[in-house]
Image (cartoon, rainbow, N blue to C red; front, side, top):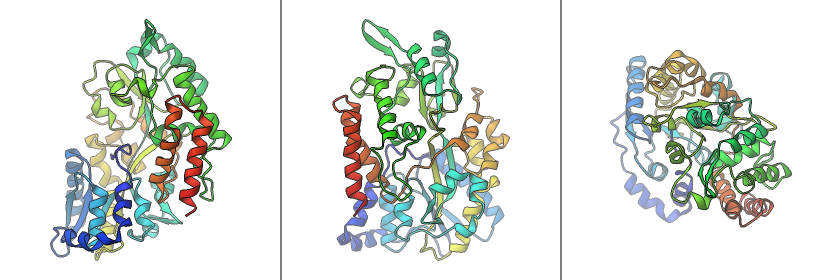
Length: 421
């Protein structure tokens, strides 16, 4: 699954903003390498992503023997290269998309799939429906969708005599237990309870759990609301008042995932990808659904399959997308351990919940149980501006050089200017 910490819309906006580049983009776009009447499907990722998608396409070929699909893997600069194809008049027929989807749908580059997936909320969950719907129309077929969960170090919890985490925890329970999981030697912290940063999935979750929002129902920014100030104050207090999570300046050469893998934190809230990263961990660990605040709110990491509005084989492309996002078409995702299928029937099937690759006996229902707890972040076409405004406005807050309200006021002002254009 694509890491939202590393990918954004900057590349897309840079390409689209410069009209003078269109002719050169068209020239370098050229042919996408497909033979006549052959569909092209583009993805990013690693070797396992390619292998699993190719297997799924082989199954699709059995279902539709008269439809041929060429898999085109784009290792880097995915968005820029896709926009090059669009500008050159040779976009792929089927495109993998994530948080950037509405930068495309808002420009008419994606086909409306509303009538093709009439039961999207039932089959994939309400959050997926919200994520891929723009101005009342569905533009993405949910493909992979794993909620964040708590990865926890059982050895640290056992040594501290603390119960393992669960969705029954609230903020008070989290704080009480977190304080018991910290270790200090000679005035220096050697083991933290938890670690976070300025990634949207961390700070927005505190906000949504406290009843706050980033945009109101009319799409206007409300980032400096009382609910958000209270949530971000608690977040900052975890660093500077209670000292249960590291300050940014204490971990300049590391991050949440590696710190947990090194046994330096008791908990880590992250995505499905971390399972493979921990296969050689020197400690016992497990996964559990996330705690709650005033409300239940869990971030979800997701990919969709979309169809180009310029495709000359739109009907065939939609048939392939519908198959790939069916229970049968998603089984290879579950069986490979690549991710959690977005199709709820596939995710609840024993091919996932009792997967043979799960050598550690993880409770994979922690992911499936969390699906109904997820929230949809505000994936407007201005998503990258939203996350940048929050990161820029709050950076000095996380560094302890600015109070929470000032940081949120800065982000509010930036977003008011950006979204009112």
